[in-house]
Amino acid sequence: MNVAIIDVGTNSTNLLVQNSTGADLARVVATTRLGDTLQQLGTLSTEAIARTVDTIASHIDVATSHNASRIVITGTAACRRASNAQHFFDAVHARTGLTVEVLSEKDEATFAFRGALTGLPELLSPTLVIDIGGGSTEYTVGVLDAEMSASIPFGSVTGTASHITTDRPRPEDLTNLIGAVSDDLEEIQRTIPALTSPARAIGIAGTIVTIAAIEIGLASFDEDALHGFVLTRDAAEDVFRTMATETLAQRVLNPGLSADRADIIVAGCCILVATMRRLRLDEIVISTRSLLDGVAARERLNP
Image (cartoon, rainbow, N blue to C red; front, side, top):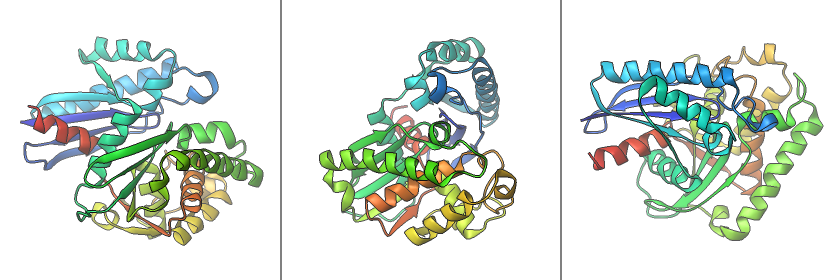
């Protein structure tokens, strides 16, 4: 049985198609910015809903071409938080006949954790998975499965909307966003002290993978180069300094940074740098696998 998972995030709407053994048949990443007005208005715009639904329909065409017998659509932060999310769900159902499964923060963390570990060495000690999304950031700790998780309301899109006010970001804006993330993490550490002492930390999703790609200088996406790559805190700080001191026009010239992520990467860097500083992480391991893989595994186990 081939399964297809479409994950609708605040920034991206991504597709994964796998066969019954878990081998990839297709992976498609698309920037749709469903949550582009979420921070300011608390709602999804008509335009964002329309382009996201169009992308979902396109993903379904790809899934069908690979003979996917089951297609699952999941939604995360933007779908949880938008006051008019039902308009989006109705539009998806009207176009495709499918229902969006809105994942709770806990379920999102669980599936992301399971996906993140795919293809990495098994470790029988606590692992921390850091998932910087468009609308939120999840922190999950576990050994072979997620055990404790927490979320902060800052992602690459919402962090940009709330704190980045100029093309070349103002130092005070960067400091304020880093401080806000650090303050939230300080609260989380009180309830999940294991955040500060994992045996390893893994970073997943578009923002962190992009920061690693910039550090490596990848002209095009290379999963073999990225999956398992060790990103040091010094390297993350270097990428942050470069991104934060350039204009958007300069930033897009960096190998590894796609044009559709260049306007939100600075906020993403702030979140990662704040996390590594607060949790005293000297390095993180990059995983190109994520929530999509975790949900796909669920579907294969429950045919």
